[in-house]
Image (cartoon, rainbow over all chains, first blue to last red; front, side, top):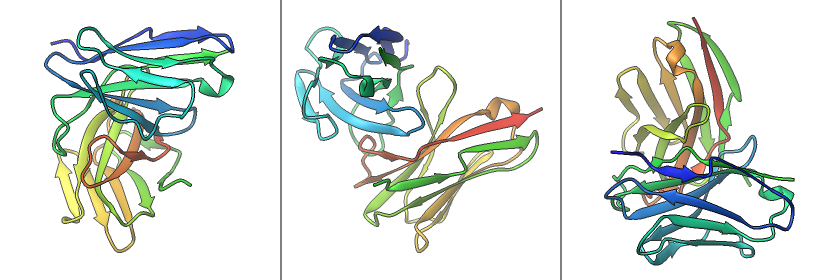
Length: 115
Length: 113
């Protein structure tokens, strides 16, 4: 059973370009979470999605960031018009349910570098 | 405002020694305190977690000690091994949420052989 997969693992973008990060949850998992880890910082929750629904986006910046988890295919975190401050590691996690006892499994992350 | 303060930033321990990482929180509504282990190039993995109704939880060589009145909790790694070398994050959440976690900044643990 493959773990959570993220691609690309490394992404370089110039200021003003768009970044698209993909996350394929573990088989059987229908809940996806995105986190951002800035250099020298802990992870920060961004958004929680189920298939075709955004459940909680309280951690998402108000502008330029969006996320989706379509019925088919991976979850996508999209960052428009990237700025240097977006440089970070972006982690996706998945779980079978969102109960308090359910473990999240993290992917290896996408390291975004904005030049 | 950082709600979970973690120390030390880095820690070097000899093989067989005890590694201790501390966290302090401010929000008394927190009621779920997990620790995550992250190896280079990998995502974090849940290591052990505690709720405030107990003062200690042990799983193998890993123990969480929890002091509700002091708003502090710590991770103890007994008989530390080189394979334990990783970054450790403490975290906290409200309502037992397993995803809306507030993380500490992490501790880089190095266990020398």
